[in-house]
Amino acid sequence: MLRIIDRVLVAYLCLSTSHAASTRRRDNGALVTSFDQVPLDYEDLSAGTTEIAFIKKDAEDPSAEDILINPGGPSNSGVQFLLAGASLIEQNFGSQYNLIGFDPRGVNNSGPTLTCFPESEAAQTVFGHKLGLPIDSNSSSAIATAYELAGGWGQWCTRANTKSGAQYANTPAVAADLLHFIKLRQEGEINGGKPSEVAMLRYYGLSYGSIIGTTFASLYPENVGRMILDAPIDMEDYYTGQSRQNLDDADATVKAFFKYCHAAGPDACALYEDSEEGVETRFRKVLQDTINEPLVVVDPYFVQMPTVASYQALQSIILQATFAPISRFPALAQLFVGLERGNGSAVAKSSGFGTLTTASAGETKSKEYHMEEPRLIILCNDANGRSNLSSIAAFEKQVEYLVDQSHYLGESWAGATGVNCHSLDLKSPKSQQFSGLPSLASKNKSAPILFLSNTIDPTSPLQGAKKMTELFPGSALVTVEGVGHGTVTAPSKCAMEYIQSYLAWGTIPLGNATCKPDSVPFVGKNGGWGTVLHPVY
Image (cartoon, rainbow, N blue to C red; front, side):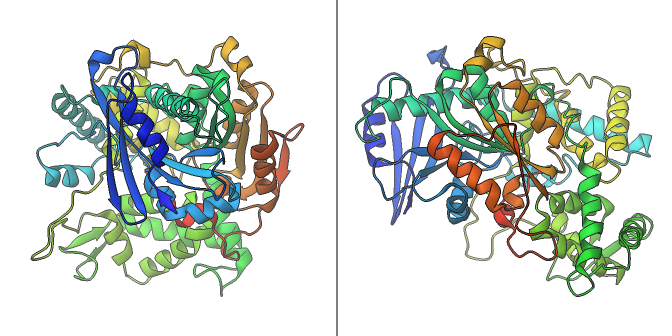
């Protein structure tokens, strides 16, 4: 049964007077929703409070340990992720643990609300389709326009958030919230009535979720119990705000599409050719045709106004496909064949430009969760002014650097990352600022962390996983010889055994380990968590 936090913890939170002033609950059949108040700043309680949402799937054993889960972002909802993928998560971890998803500060159900358009959701939606788009690296005008538009968003967003508490939405604060949570669990004697002397975190983080994990391990090393970090991001690079170390393996991920399409044959891959090079040539021709002769879509089944199936939209689709190749590569091949045949409907629909977010007659439209603004505000808060893209010239060099890293994904990454921070003026308090590297003392106190990585990952390269493993002494890296964003998108029984052994006994492989995936794109049917992971960029 899924529910939001168990009743014992809710009762304890209601009695607490220091760090959890009140708890709201919503009962809806088998689901119980709880929004728990935490301080915006644990070192300055006068700053006020905000609410954090958790959801829990109970194990059958009432004394079971908790595993907290974050699916990345920063802006993906752990609550929605657990609702969509609890059974998949159990396959990896086993059913003997309580699974707890949570929405970090500013994400989905948790406060503070992060928006630059608090008075107009329509404006938020329209501008959201323009924010963070891929950038034409061959056009000085396009680079300058993207830079100025990002700056305008930063100024607008700063003005809209003078009193919103948005500056308190950052990763060090999320780490403090997790510490607060596990202390409440320990102090409430919920786990079999045998609280440990020190509250210990059991945690799984994917992608940006690994930043939450390594930040927690840096700030609170003595509270690390079990920590599994999949598709780990180079935390030092992340906290610079420039995201310059993400794309080392990005083109290898796209080239894996050509490799597996050819290997699978014409019955499995719609874009099949008689060589890998042939598939790539056909793929690149579609890209060039989309630039030179873009298709317009007027079918009301797909769009609500005439919409161009643009190259920018196609770039974003390719990026999303590389995150979960087993689940998404076959559809990508079919989409490319559609473009060859003059059908751009799927591309136009995915862009969002041709769709109005209006309610049907007699229907009350519910407020949507817009992921892009929370993602960028949290990223920029964490960078704390270090992104240093203070001019168009500096940004032009950044674009050039990223496109040199990745021909296929560099333009998408350039538009979706650090440029959006250059005019955003939200300052997190000193208590929530982090340099990006653990101190020598803290990293030597942390329990061993189990890192996981695919051999080829579009935005969390294996080199970053190796760096993070070395940064935390005694930790280990399990590498799956697969492709995709996180080993959970390239399922491996071998990796699963390492995970379950680590959770149960704390054992990690000596000298790291390598595993084979159970299936590959176009042939395998088990796409793992790729079926429930929400698109981010």
